[in-house]
Image (cartoon, rainbow, N blue to C red; front, side, top):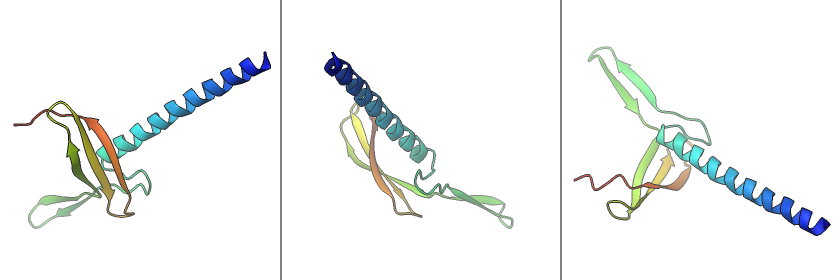
Length: 99
């Protein structure tokens, strides 16, 4: 009886930790998409030139497509932070052919 209860508790713990891992991975990808580094907290900077009346943006996160698996497939994107040199690869659902 104790074996069944302990196995059930371990199973529920494994399911909970797996869901927590995927949630944290999605929030890290959302931070990268918003231009914020999840490790160091750096975000994009903006500068205003009063002479030309233009605003310039310097992005901290660089995105690069590593592999694209067709029009409706998965896109693998590499995110790199310029300030702390963090590099992560995340996948996202394909955005179409973009012809």
